Image 1 (cartoon, rainbow, N blue to C red):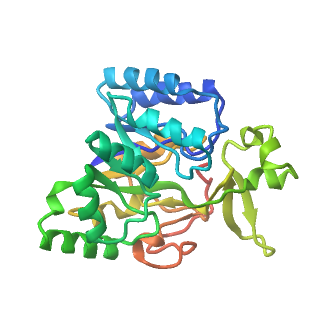
Image 2 (image 1 turned 120 degrees about the vertical axis):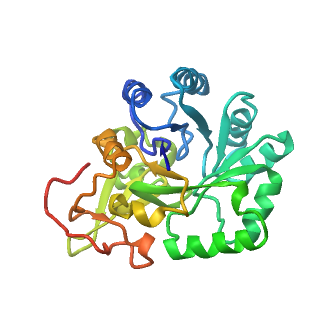
Amino acid sequence: MQYSLGPILYFWPKAQVEQFYDKAAQSEAEIIYLGETVCSKRRQLKMSDYIAIAKALADRGKEVILSTMTLLEAPSELAQVRKYCENGEFLVEANDMAAVNYLRKLKVPFVAGPALNIYNHRTLDLLLKQGMKRWCMPVELSKDKLSEILSKCDAIGIKDRFEVELFSYGHLPLAYSARCFTARSENRAKDNCELCCLNYPRGRVASSQEGQTLFVLNGIQTMSGYRYNLINDLKTMEGLVDIVRISPEAANTFEALTNFVHSNSTSLTAYETNGYWHQIAGLTPFGANLTHARVMS
């Protein structure tokens, strides 16, 4: 299996992003995704900055993919997606069907991101005909569901025509909304948010009345409250998954990457889960010895 670093989902200052990718260039990740996928108001880095980082990473032997926005709300955002699709040098991860449409017209291969609603072999067959070369499956799908889909892909002769990528570490992106939850939490209007997401490099935790961590709010994105961690499930991915995705966090991302690459199994913390992979509730860990050790955040 190969290992990838997904796009940064949080809003970090430009200097922090650049430092992260300096470390990524020296890391064991073979594949690195770049780009803003959550909110178009996060403009600390422009497209030209991402292209410069992409070229530097490519010079270090990394496969670089430019990730597009997930929820498009304005013509300006659509125009930006088009620019990414027309970059002419780097592969693009499409996180919205508008990007798929542009890439299809350009007749260039692309990665189908986890935000696309792909839940069966027929949809995969359709996207293959439009240029898909890799599928990062939706985060809520299980091992059994993936196995079932790939079995049906095999039956129609397409199983070996695309790679499968699995979101394996990080807070899961569960939903997107036209409203900004982070701005709302500070009693701000979305149009006057003053980029308050910068104050929450790990997102903002939303807990139940009983004190249970339910979600992490990240601008317009709702994420899982518990960190998803499939470090102990690598063997179950064999024969199904080609690429293991690590989603960048504000700390310990590269420590987690090393653990995955070297199969360093570890007990999940009290705030980590692997539930979806085992087709059980997302807040419920399966087959793990929980520990209240330091949470890797």
